[in-house]
Length: 151
Image (cartoon, rainbow, N blue to C red):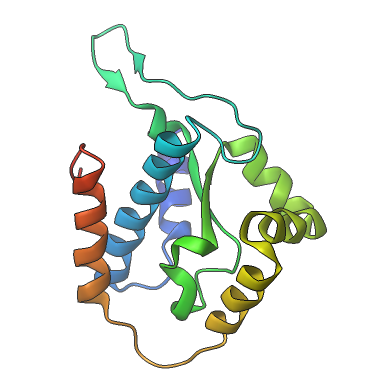
């Protein structure tokens, strides 16, 4: 089972750039913790996620029970780390929205509003370099504000 999980994690990493991998990890943590802070769990079905204490006493945090779901794929660098482009949702909702693209669109339109949705799409069309150092600094600051720091 561990081999399959490791293979899936490698597949999810777009590109071989370690900076992007680090930013993806920080961004995912930020989005999932934001969902816990704002909703208490999944941003689609609103299922609450709480910290679970394992038999060995370790804590499995609620935010790790969520997934970071991008509306516009991560290959669009201009919106890859855009907080309007991602939500923290449970695995079932992630699969559902992926399999139902029209509902995925409607969900994000309702979330962002028509104008916000149009602006997100416009940002996704931008080309050019992104400032990865600034994004990393911003993500670390946001995670610090949440009180749990960076893992």
